[in-house]
Amino acid sequence: MPPFATSRCSNLLICMTSLQHTALLFILLLAGLTQIPQPPPGTLPSREAGLHAFDSILTVLRHPRCINCHPSGDRPMQGMEQRQHYFNVQRGPDGHGVAAMKCGTCHQRSNNPYSGVPGAPHWHLAPRSMGWVGLSDHELGAQLLDPERNGGITVAELEEHMLHDSLVLWGWAPGVDRNGNQRELPPLDLPEWRAAVKTWIGSGTPIPSPK
Ligand code: HEC
Ligand code: HEC
Image 1 (cartoon, rainbow, N blue to C red):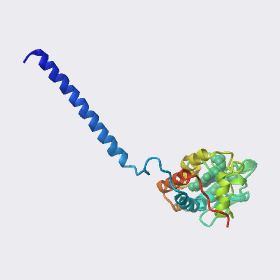
Image 2 (image 1 turned 180 degrees about the horizontal axis):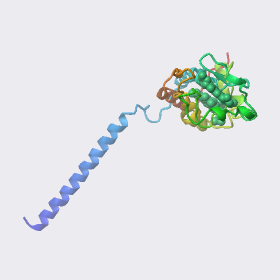
Image 3 (image 1 turned 90 degrees about the vertical axis):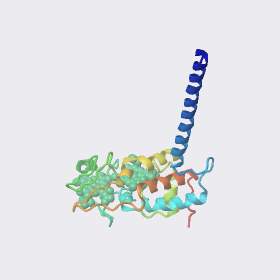
Image 4 (image 1 turned 135 degrees about the horizontal axis):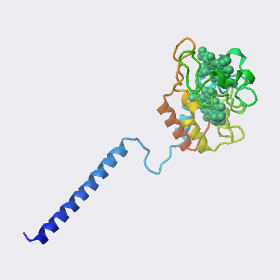
């Protein structure tokens, strides 16, 4: 065979293999993508799906793991029975407690498995404007979306907070209480919560109308 032909052949081979590689990569990519269930491109969850997701979100917000820190008064609550916090702990000027009773004196950056004191970064009481006790479904939804009362955050920031904030995430890793018993988890698991938040936000944050 003349050298010319050999070189053509080997060029063709290189060319073929790289084409096959591209095809293979493409197939792998598709296979990878199809593992994550996604709505068809360009479609957003419906308002109905959003309202349904918001119902599930409410079951979490009203669970003691969350609402114990979102009281409508000036004291955090404790436990499933939502009793008043020990030692008459108070909100204080900034939600971090008063003088000798600062939250951070007892609550550290992580749960204490020996004393049963729960902990997470920046542990403090939600501001009064974010108190949820006694609010209707409509009122709670309106509170979340009102920049006057939600800490001046946008919907995108609200989503970020709900998906990743350390106090929110603590709800799914609440540790043990003083008697060494595991604290109960919220009614949705973390992936279900995140999916509900994304559906609600993606559908345009619909909330139930006032009753
Ligand atoms: C003197 C120590 C101390 C101080 C100060 C303190 N806490 Fe606590 N807190 C505890 C202990 C102990 C527990 C655990 C009680 C149990 O579950 O048995 C607790 C539990 C809690 C819980 C209950 C968690 C749950 O879901 O059941 C919340 C919420 C809470 N504290 C918020 C606060 C906030 C907010 C502050 C500051 C305003 C604060 N605490 C100040 C000791 C303290
Ligand atoms: C230790 C107290 C604490 C716990 C527990 C806690 N939060 Fe909060 N939450 C706060 C504070 C404080 C803020 C105000 C923003 C900030 O300073 O991080 C807040 C703000 C929020 C907001 C922002 C918007 C608003 O308008 O209310 C949402 C949503 C929220 N929390 C959801 C949750 C959920 C869901 C859980 C339970 C899984 C939870 N929180 C548990 C203290 C807490």
